[in-house]
Image 1: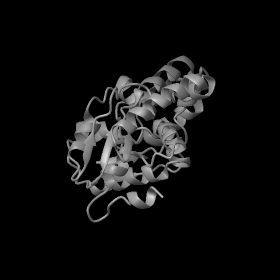
Image 2: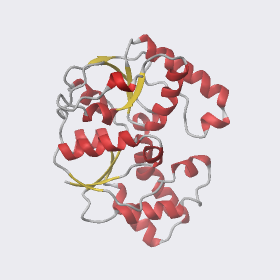
Image 3: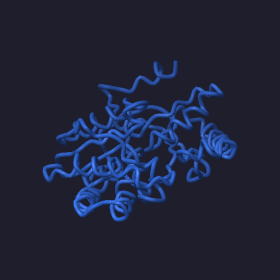
Image 4: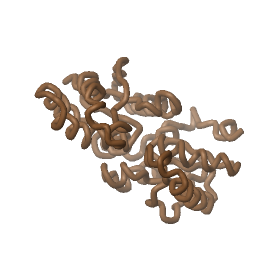
Length: 255
């Protein structure tokens, strides 16, 4: 398939390794990648904060960059951004857009996927040939779980990874407390939720906490780092991209 890769803002600025891992994984599975160079933000931060007219140019840009009929699917390493494109872009276009924007949004939303749902539902694969001989626990992010309803797809992919020791996290579906600007506007509540999540991660004895959203991993990883836990926060794509011939350098990353 010909896949348009959307890096996302956090991926571009703070987690480029997760984007590179996504590209490496999809290429290894035989897909042709297209990376529109003019791609920007999906506009989620504006929409979630109540500024729904302001992201119209961003929504239009996304539709123009990825609406090419030659692109079979748009894939991104983010459940929240995929949820924004699939559900919130239409809302913005209907309220503040013109007919061209509404048509563009309609053309692209149906072929937009978060990484795990693309792999399982579209590519029809669970075993991606990954090798990751470490103890890992998985955090199901709120948008992927509740908006996209990816279910157990990330776990199915992880269970097929060679060498992995997958540890179930207690109360895994509880929010980590990030929530975008929620963590800024409600810092005390956010910090309390994060403390609970970090405790649950640590209870598994895992050396890695993984998720499908870099935003949650930024939040959880910060909490783990501040207590010097030694547990890393890694995107799902980074685990799935690791192989026997090209393993993830966990010992070096932990330094």
